[in-house]
Image 1: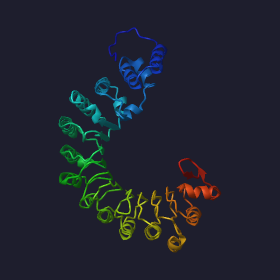
Image 2: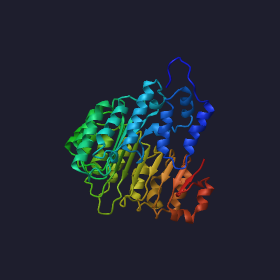
Image 3: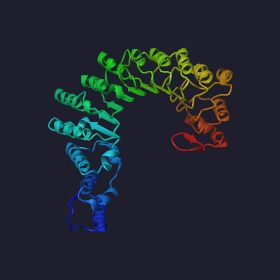
Length: 414
């Protein structure tokens, strides 16, 4: 950007604008390359900066490198342009950054060090609003030993630069366990508020790293292999959201974990369990779930998905008896839940007076009597998902209570 006081010959703003608009509308142009060209153009002079800012898609800054279209050269160019914009005192761009996505697909053997340098260069700018890192490791489990070493080296380089990071997401497609991931969690543990881990095998060092994440507010564990998670939960006294998606061969001790949540996480506000089980898999005991709902006074969201063992006894004893304060309930795919009035009526009382959303998708045996009871007694209800079979029988029932269809089996009312 021109900074000297000497007069310079420049294009009129309207001409600059037309040039940029032409680049945006070019038929064969790559949208990403166009955005990078606009960013480069914005560094030429004040006029170009003003015109480019009106056209740049701020979303590419808020979530850097989201998607798979980014190649190593794109990442390098992005990093250099961000560094140059800051050097020129143009803080607007790098202050927009909230999330950075690191895709292993960019870490080809011949280019991984260059891409790693680019990610490091961006972190060294210390973007003040960057709070989340996402590591997409799909394909790494089946990759070469060299590619795994390079990924581990990347984590080791980035971990010391993550002072502002409070949310981390590791997304894999296998059950590999990487020592560098455990080290990364350990280094950033004191600042971590939110952590999601997909398809990684937990080892003792993983549990040790998770134990020092004492400030953790949210945890989402998906398709992992962990046999002693219950011993870690007591280290998260400030936990607000817990979600666990069980894998096919998961040896997760569900009752032990639920008891640990009830005893150690008094501020828990959301509990979600995805079992997708068959009759052969053990489901949580009703007594365990009843204890959880009773012991967590801030619990407002409760969900169990895909459980083929839960039945109306659970609905009556746990949710109706103890869950008066619940605002959001999801029981999708719990096919044994019917809401049989002979079981549920004795516990209904005032029902769920605070309930705002209820989802019973694929609960094909749900009774019309139970659906009507929900609609009649839950005055704050704004969104409901009933099984398609029930809707087909009694669509007038929902319309009578002011609900209108919003697509995907979902009904809403103002």
